[in-house]
Image (cartoon, rainbow, N blue to C red; front, side, top):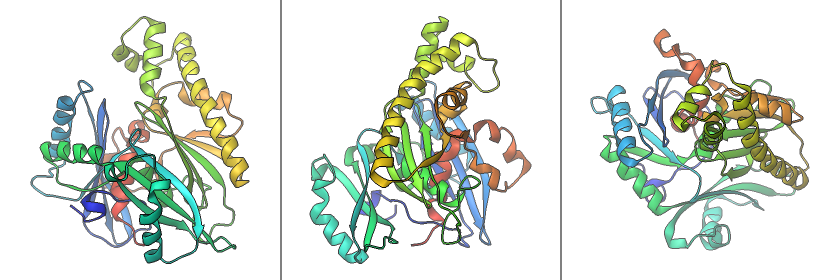
Length: 363
């Protein structure tokens, strides 16, 4: 496994395709499904090789282990090993953006080691930390630095689960970093990156996961704000189950893509999304005041973006364009078989895609 912060932790780099010939597998492990994406880069062109969404029978470690073993077998990773990158997110992780005086990478590392305690509310010996310069174009000789921490026991537990399931993990990253990777390489139409961009715009990516939602605000191709909001799809399914008089598992089926949504179910979704939107608007107000930048679009991602009625609820309650993000539209597929079902699963595969893209970068 790669040597980076005691072999475990890798953070975002500003990324662009290189001419690597090998492929990389991104693995997004959830309580209800395990998602995997394999990406190759041939002659500078990224290609989607294969993907998988493997359901988890029960939200426990044994069931997750079974699903991961199926993914490992389906991808043939034991017969033909490829780099596998997984991630963690939510409680026990922390990402912040710090303005610092411009300095060399060596000086930044020295300063970060000395001052890391003031950025994180965790005991120093209980976490892995890292930092990375996001931009240095401030006219006042300042730079924006991403600083992050993750609890050691979470990383150790994740690596054990992966190895027990047949994987040889190459690196562990953060869910939010994976989302930023995808945006850096495959941004939505109209959101350009790099020096060729005529107009930089700030937008929000709302990644609705099972137990929580990650809100990331991106400007000029780099993340500028990150917040975990602990409202996710589990709350939506639970609320819908109570209103419809069914089990949460049955509610999942009734809210799945392509199913005609009952109005009572829409009210359940609206009630949960209203609480989420309240928290998002509070974050927007803080960001706009702090950065003096307007947010012009919202892109929905994750499991929650696929729930029938979620996009509608956002559109009816936000005063800006809202769309479900599908970065796979910009990627060629290795075969027509890969396209089967991809559209219906694209949003839930974004984190796994970002992890697979992690290796196609340079400093």
